[in-house]
Image (cartoon, rainbow, N blue to C red; front, side, top):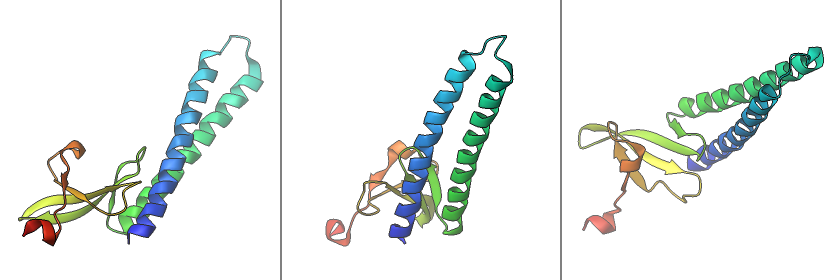
Length: 126
């Protein structure tokens, strides 16, 4: 399943970068506002807001696609994904993010992302 999750996460990360740029452009546009801006300015603001909303909607659809696979989007900006599991009777997540070749860390559900621990392979356990 990781190749499919990777593809969706890469799409999310790309759209998230676009959202960040569009949001910056919109803030810049709003700061340039003048009293005599007129309808051209208002049209540009409306179009910018609509484009931004469309990008947010795309992220939401990708997030729903991940959830239909049983995984969670943790941090869209880095393409961080979590796979729910139970470890030693406690709710936990296997963690993966773009750039990692495999799922190699985990955390308990009540721990932050920064508390991830490496997954130990059978060779490492013995």
